[in-house]
Image: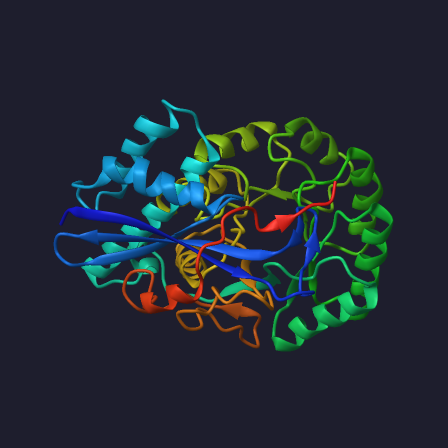
Length: 382
């Protein structure tokens, strides 16, 4: 069974006026996603999702014009061979660019979908797992900067649905971040896990001020306080308190960059995104490295049900997996455009689909509703 074509389909959705969510990377204007379709000589078609970065048109072009020509004609089930060819011809010889890793991630995911469909096995089973329930937290583009009262109300809505963990956006300013986090803890009580994410905008002074308070409210982690390659700051911040682990990984690409995280010794929670890190093939390798050091893997989620389903399959087959990031964004039509991917239970857990491959039935007629809008999905006022 040979790969006959690889196609990227960029999609966009502009948020309604006044419905933006503001966080450290800016205020949302639109949502973007890239669906990758891989067709084969035996009629089996696989689908994956590539993260758009801040330039969906560029990632789509990389997929179709750079990576596709080197993979068409290969055995569609040879995910390791396909990954290695892209690594040799693109990542290692022309720079380990984030764009190429995003593009490869979507292709790799689609190839795993093909493998599962060809074997008539759900992905979790193909990966050696079982259909177990996975704890989830309320995440995605939600719980952004807002008055503490409305933030607590929004968080309470998610807890009422069944979530036993929520993630708050930090990075506004240290004072407001502290006030909001303390208020949400008081509102939710002690039985809800509060996770936090500064989206890379903290200074060391911010971290020194905020981390002790996060320890007081028993926060589960502080995610991405600094830029992904600022290892010195991560090492320094890790000394502030042992009670709040630092988390990172959604902006690290391939196992080689995660190896740098390991060498830095400062990040205690890893968060690879299967639509960014190099795909499922690389996600398995990253999780294995983490497992040897007893580091939990709490994957970051991208936009569509394809990524969410693939992530749940991956977690169900990963011994050191932690929380699934459930997208609870109020304006993300891509999450359920092929039907609901997951349902939160009273136990605060979700489970992967049961169908073969990723388990998502893709209706391409929906794509016409979301024509691509190039450019970044966030706006920042400098």
